Length: 141
Ligand code: CMP
Image (tube, rainbow, N blue to C red; front, side):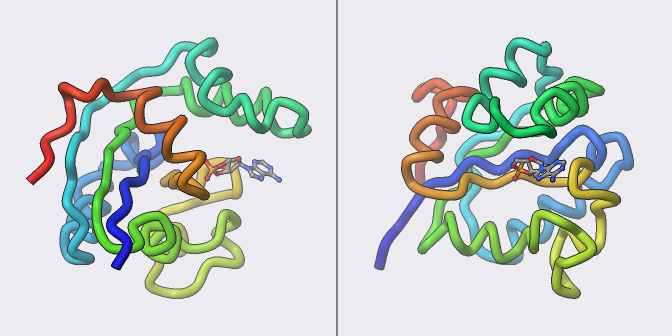
């Protein structure tokens, strides 16, 4: 048993489409505990800081601009093997390769506008959760 926390983001494309609620329903049905959630409209500097690990990638500027197009909804999810289980629920980064029944298969439109984000490791979660939430904003139970 490994109880983990992960950072999930409903990205601006999914918030704009009005599917944040459906995504939260899938999260709840999968028995994650939502410890925190809020709407945030990131500045370019905030998006660049969040995705700093990708700064050398050719898609970095475009990805950061996309993440500032409108509000996104970061959340902290907790549960057994939460990091991998949330990645499984999201599906492959490229929606064209995502399995049926996954969030990206159903709601993403491209590899960039791919509806959701999830931490890829415990180290990433340790950086990403406090990027958006202070300890006072988490509601453990
Ligand atoms: P995410 O899980 O938020 O982590 C980094 C993001 O970069 C990823 O989802 C995609 O939205 C984006 N990304 C990854 N690869 C590419 C790519 N080849 N072209 C454009 N965006 C990409």
